[in-house]
Image 1 (cartoon, helix red, strand yellow):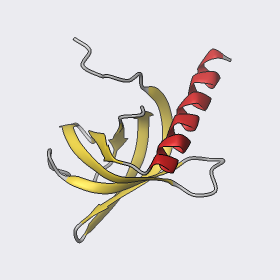
Image 2 (cartoon, rainbow, N blue to C red):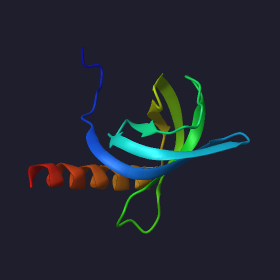
Image 3 (spheres, rainbow, N blue to C red):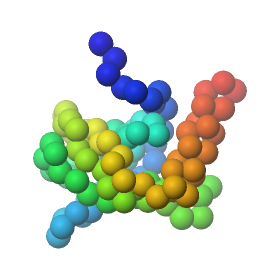
Image 4 (tube, helix red, strand yellow):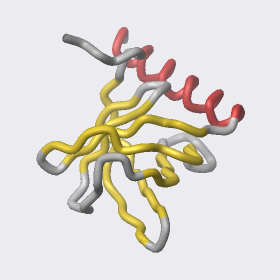
Length: 106
């Protein structure tokens, strides 16, 4: 059964995440307005919160998610839910998703 509240779009964006004294990087494989899936070798724990940056080609600065929480982990990937994001960053995120949606239709 599909539990997602927002549609997800396939992407391949470099991302970094940090919290406390730890920092890791990975690749954002899919993206929605509410969260994303990241592929990484970096060990994470369900329930952990951190700041996340997603490097989208064409944007001057990476998208900054002030707080994201790990919801699941599976074989080198994990899913995060965006729990805190500034309104201007959310606007950029929605534009990135709209662009991904347009690419799908093309």
